[in-house]
Image (cartoon, one colour):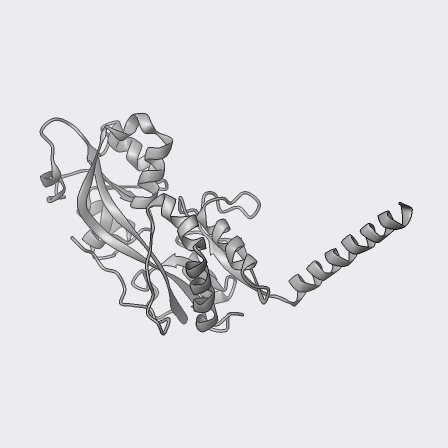
Length: 274
């Protein structure tokens, strides 16, 4: 019995050493985590939850050459963090969102989300309500690029041109609509249906637009000199797509898992679609 226990401890110790050795041999890829529910909920290193941590776990499980880890950043700081090399990858991005002129490569993830208009569902109000935005109070997310505004995220422009209130939470913007403090909120589809799942009692009070402000074709933006190449990252995403891991992670939030071009190239940037 004693020999058996000694052998077990020795085996566990050897496995631990092999695990540590494999981590040390793997190239670390630092992925920016900005608070962006449901993709990232809290971006603090030890508290972050949401879809990004699940995706990084899946990427780490499927191979041993790279170790993907998140590093806290912010919506407005992520461009600079990538340029300075503080992070290697900004994720769930679109090449049209201010990445022009930044030395980074776009990798199509084959994931699609959308931005929808949401209003209070009151008697006599229908889809025509969303056709005209002028003279309506808009609840927008600070730092976001919106199709109806020509993808300009400048706060003064949005406030002065569209009578916008800029917040830091989709939930807060939806509550502004429910409480009559805003006429229309623009909300990411994945976050909207997550909000409805968490607040079933409020679902019937919301009028959701058929009009789509824009479709997000999510990309990963890799800095020049990142430990992993765009081609290698594309291969890993394809492995997760083929295994069903992407569907398991993203489909519960109505994020569509789409095919990517055979050569792994990114398609044209998504723009406003109505």
